[in-house]
Length: 212
Image (tube, rainbow, N blue to C red; front, side, top):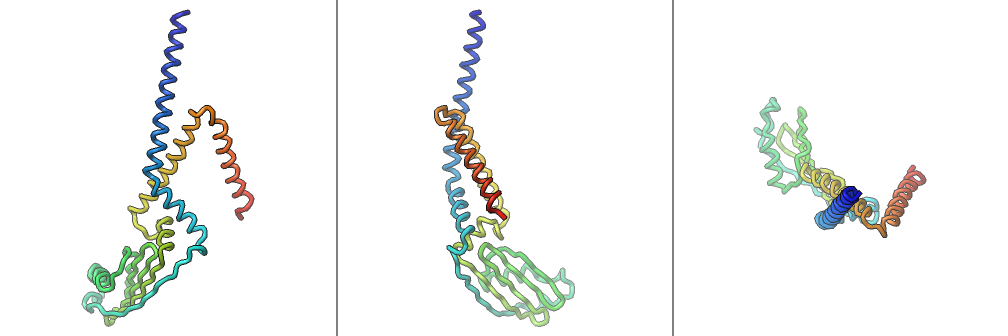
């Protein structure tokens, strides 16, 4: 019987060591993932509030209109492939300080429409192909519109969209590591899981009762 007891003791010690290592690694991950993602999580928490209460954080839009003229030879060719699209876009950016990404370049028989979009920003240019004259309108919103658009990923480009995905993954990891940690806190385990279940049930009840 002694070898059997000895084997059981060894297995128990091994299991205890593994549990301690898992607990230590989970705690380490939870702490440092939380700190690493603090700025992102705080930003998306704040902007969740500003999005939910836009009436509290109203911005005033600023609009301006300008006119101008581009070289006629850039747009006069009937072959649309011969139009100087890059030159037109760079000319408009430089002359009027336009921001945002090029979102539209529409070619009609008589007119070109060039649009630039960014978070809390939009610019539209209407160019007459007959004479090269154009009308420009720019609309800019304030700080809260900017951070709300960043939260939604509206006109922010691919890199920011990837950052939103990363922040979502970090939120999930922080939540999951916190949940795993509760398994190793014997004195607080039951209370922790009861509170988690209460939170889950309350979230569902809010949805079931008050969401139309």
